[in-house]
Length: 118
Image (cartoon, rainbow, N blue to C red; front, side, top):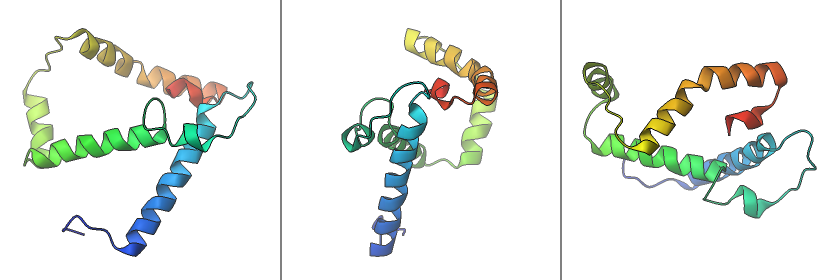
């Protein structure tokens, strides 16, 4: 709801969705040629390449955008009108990685290996 509090039903639905997402993400993170090791500890780790970490990052990004007091449309207009200055080495590495996105998706569909996304 708008107050920031969830109902009991929303908490249960959220718990179930996050749990399922963590397991599914862990399943897709394993290569087909390695033995599968089921580990809740690994799946629920909040660091590294896990669904928990990605969900946390998404939540933080959405919180930052919400706290900016700008609508999605306003942010898109601003992004289109202002050049992106990549000054830090980490920013450049990330930009280069993002430019490979379509190539990675193509490789995944050809080889049926989702592990290349991570």
